[in-house]
Image (cartoon, rainbow, N blue to C red; front, side, top):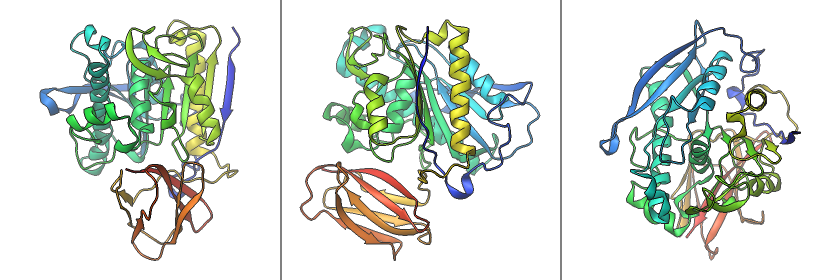
Length: 400
C-alpha cells in the first residue's frame, strides 16, 4: 500500500546548541552494540516506584549526547517499558545512531473499567503526563549533578507508541494550565498543578520535539504558533486513537482524541516543523506488525531529527529554545512578567493575539519586563521574542 508523506521542514537553529558537524552520527547506525541499563528508578513520588531503562551506544566517548525518551502503548491500562516492540526497537536503533535513549514505565489505570468513565480516564492520562514530566526532569537533574548519562540537556526529545504518544503529545503541546479545558484544569490542580507531582522538582520538563506514533490530542487547538517540531505516523482508518476527532477506543472511552487528520492542518497553518506519514486504509499502529513500515518510521524519523539538530539550512531561522527566559504567571490575570538571564541577544518583545495582531511591543533594555493587560480580553496569546540577529521565538500564554 502506498505511503503518503507530508513534510514541512522548517529547522530550528539555536546557535551554539546546533550539532553543526554531525557527520553520519544521529543519522546512521554507526555503533554496532548497545549497552542497556535496566530498572533505574526515576521517581518514588505518590507512593509509586517508577522505573526506566537506558540504552547507550557501547564504547561511545561523546560527553554531550541528545536524549530520546519513549513511552509504551497499552491504552493506559497495560504495557511496560519492555513489552512494546516498537519502543524497544527504536530505543536500540537510536542508541546505535549515537543517542542516549530511555524507555519509561508510567502510572496506569487501576483496572480497565476506569477508562469507561470520562473523569477517571482524564485523571489517568494526566497522571501519566505528570510521570513523563518527571522522567524528563530526572535526566536534567542528572546532567546538572552526577552526569551519569552524559546527555545534552538542551536537546531532549520524547514520544511514544499509541498511549505513549498521547502522553507526550499533551506534554509538549499543552503549554499552560489556562489552555486546558475546565475539566482538565480541575484534575490538574488536584494532582500537583501544571508541573505535576511526580517528583524531580526544580528542573525543566521542556522538550525539543516529539515523536508521535498513532497519538493524538484532546484538542487540535493546543497546537499554535511557535510550538515545537514533531514527527508523526498514523493510519487513516485508526479508530483506537482516531485519525480525526472522535471518542477513543472505537468510542468506548468517552474522551475525545484528535489524531493526525485533525492535527496536520494546524501544523501547516502555523508552520510547525514536522514530517507526517499517513498509511491509507491502515488501522492502529500498522508498523507494529509490518517490518517494512517499521523500517520506514525508524529511518524517516531519524532523518527528521538529524535535520533538526544538524542541518545548516537557514530558510527560516526560528529559535525554539528560550533557556534563561521566564514568563510568569501563566495563566496571568493583570500583569505578565518576563525575566531574562541574558538580555544581549534580544531586541524586543511583542504580544500577539491568536490571529497574529500586535497588542504590545517593548524593547529589551532591562532583565525584567512587565506587560500590563490594559483591557485585553481573556484568551490565548503569544509572546514573540525578536533576537538581534533577526530570528525569533514564540511562547504561548493565557490571560484569564
